Image 1 (cartoon, helix red, strand yellow):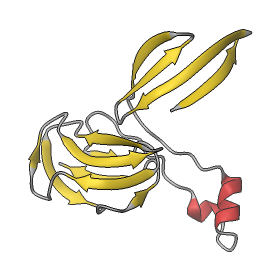
Image 2 (cartoon, rainbow, N blue to C red; image 1 turned 120 degrees about the vertical axis):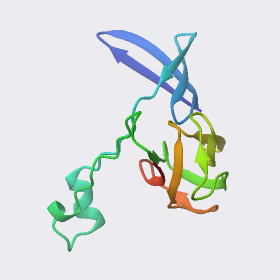
Image 3 (tube, helix red, strand yellow; image 1 turned 90 degrees about the vertical axis):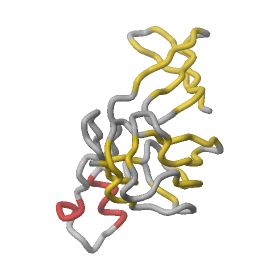
Image 4 (tube, rainbow, N blue to C red; image 1 turned 90 degrees about the horizontal axis):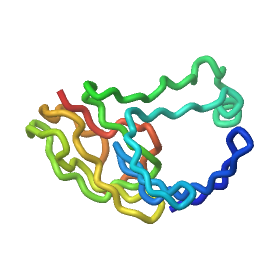
Length: 142
């Protein structure tokens, strides 16, 4: 996917982001493979960017709420920008932790978005073919 050259405390790191899923990322750091759990996703838009997006509206009125998912929250968010390819469940359907909910294409890769908890799908906010932004609410599970 992406490669980064980072420097931390005067030490160089070559980081290759191999795979980014909804709850796990696979990295290669200086030639060694790592799997990293993702506990939350949030998107922060600087106020200066809000002024450019909607110059006629005061920035305070546009401040987005941080889109963070905790492990016990039934909100399903887009982990990265992309397109919804398929939806595997329907409103009213019971889902189990780890069950695929969506197939999403992002950065030319297909990713399954999986349930983080057991519950019932109460709302689906997107349709196949929709483009979504990182942190956008896709579905609610109660």
